Length: 138
Image (cartoon, rainbow, N blue to C red; front, side, top):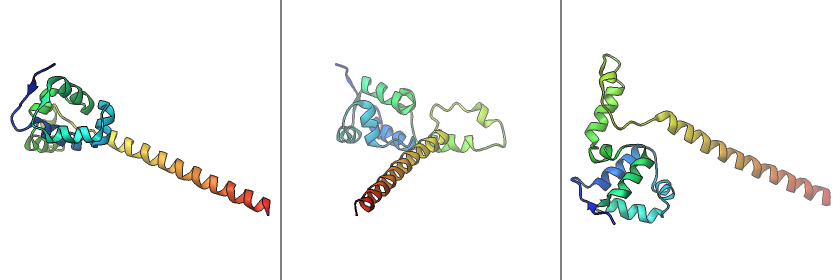
């Protein structure tokens, strides 16, 4: 059993914020952790997390454990602004350990919409087949 880590500024709140910024909900994190959404919710409300769980969560979120430990809203905003500042070499000189890939998020949303559309289309095709069958029986 590992010793719980009690980092400053409640590391689990940092995990929660990074999860939100990455567009990952508690259900998705729970599935990837092999646990329930309620367990993730309780974890995010606690004050400690063990080292093994932190490593596992960092991997799922696509960041390092150090990025989680050192995460701050101000740093995230500054890194975002730096990435969007094309006036100088700040982007190339940035030492950011936490990035958000909007393209990945867009692809994920498009895939979800495509699956939804396919289910709706199949439902409509099933309705049409059923109605055609009803007409034949009359």
